[in-house]
Length: 80
Ligand SMILES: [Zn+2]
Image 1 (cartoon, protein in one colour):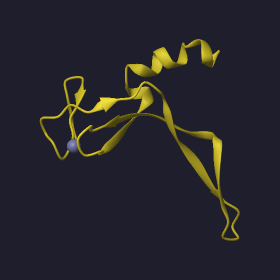
Image 2 (cartoon, helix red, strand yellow):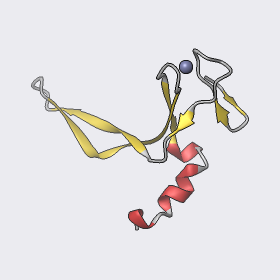
Image 3 (cartoon, rainbow, N blue to C red):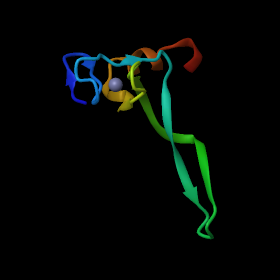
């Protein structure tokens, strides 16, 4: 659902502001060995901020670097 100001609204409940959890997520890279086997590489991926609708459970993610949360995450003591 489009952002309205700084809030994210549920696609199923257009008047419901979705809730962001307070942790950072990532979509990890998936790799193939070319023989039909795949593996997940947790050392590489795309950082995401996730929002959830408390009514229906719809979730939506945004590229973390495009949100105001990225700079505070990078500056947190756990990431130094
Ligand atoms: Zn909803």
